[in-house]
Length: 220
Image (tube, rainbow, N blue to C red; front, side):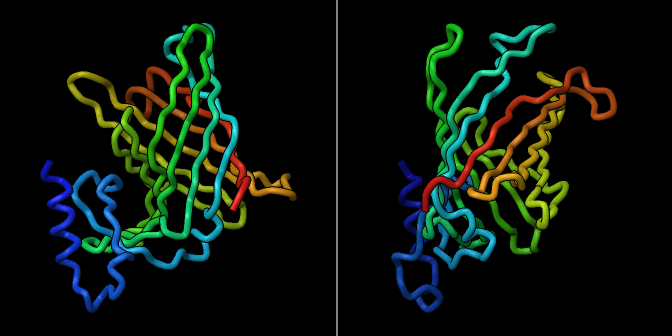
């Protein structure tokens, strides 16, 4: 019950001289996992290309249906929407980013009930210039990915996220490869592949593709 009050106080603490229009200040607590305020900023040239609705078919590795000899992938439809007002800057730490609203719709499949998973897909730059990718949803919480490789000419980025080893589970490493489909002249399409490895980096117990698919910019 205290969260809205804390955010309101944080918004009031922003100097009026810095942001004359109070409508430009938004609650962005869901991005940071704590009470946070952000101001709407002009989208960078790169983030301008994100604006619109991205849709496409994906499939994810099913632990329930797969076994050692057969990997089963469950289909789902992915939609991510971005608007001009989703280009934001955290008024406290200076992080600037664009926030996409993600919806994954899973139909019934091989006895598994249908479900819808909603979350955020956040791409941005920290105040020190470090690029970051963050995903937020109810199933996995906040996951911060580190940039491993980037080629602007090819339209490709590679990100990684590591879950450290604990008393309850081995280390897990996720790698996301996001690459523009250069064969598509009529539309902007991004091919996405997510891999996972379990165990030590130099000798994993298991590794493979866990998500694959593409989404295309269908509307602005």
